[in-house]
Image (cartoon, rainbow, N blue to C red):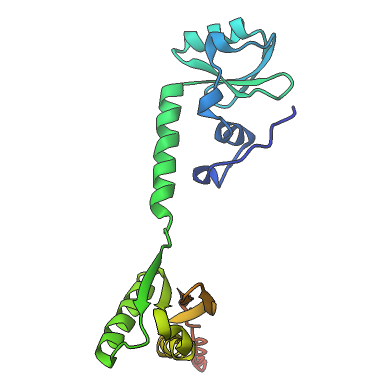
Length: 213
């Protein structure tokens, strides 16, 4: 039996059987079920993933109706197409529940911008630096930007010194993803949080052997 190789949603990253793979490939936008299935013959899988063989769709629909279930085409490009007897409404509910659970586990990384100026005083600098450290601790990236106004463009070295000072001050918590660079009249750098280092466990001391009497 030939199978279609389509993209698998993140919720189905671990698939234990070919039938689960086919179910993961179902595209809800183009699904055919029951009387909408047009093939002359279909390969049928029952609701317990058992093979029922090849038969006309009307016969497969009859078997599904006898169980109070639907006949769903799960691999239309196979020869013959593969259909499964299932509770399609329950299947959609379970699929959406798994997708929601997968989204909850995903960490969305955002880029927070902290703006500096070449005339910033020490107190204001410390406040902004603490903002950077807080964003990094929360797992976000930081865009440290400095905009030059008017004649300040003649002192771009001061702006670079400011950004490089910040990089040094947060070096224990951040890695430089993009070094300071100019875009128009703005200099910026991108900082990313350091990955937590896993402390290696010290080797266990050998247990002293008790002398035998």
